[in-house]
Length: 129
Image (cartoon, rainbow, N blue to C red; front, side):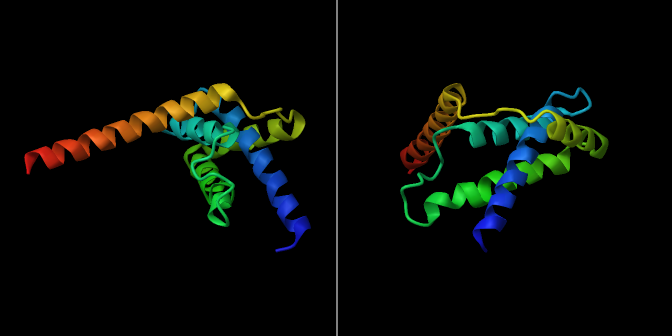
């Protein structure tokens, strides 16, 4: 894959992220898609990655697979007419979504909570034995 093709894909991904953000604001979008959209945007804008970029090769896995996957899932859950309208708006009004430490803080808290629940479950499992 050449550099121009990667740049094109990155631009498309950024535009789709903006469109998903605009779709989130539409009242026709139900709760599950809104949750997926919030996770997608939160993860994409968070300066903290699930897999740190300094880890060779797999460090960019989230940027290449997780974020596009979340955005694709969100798009599939959004009604087509809403997504079409959101894409048109994203073309006319590109949002300046940037890294956000509020998203990062929320993202970290969610991961800490999830890890805490997993550790507690494991400890309870070992206490039974």
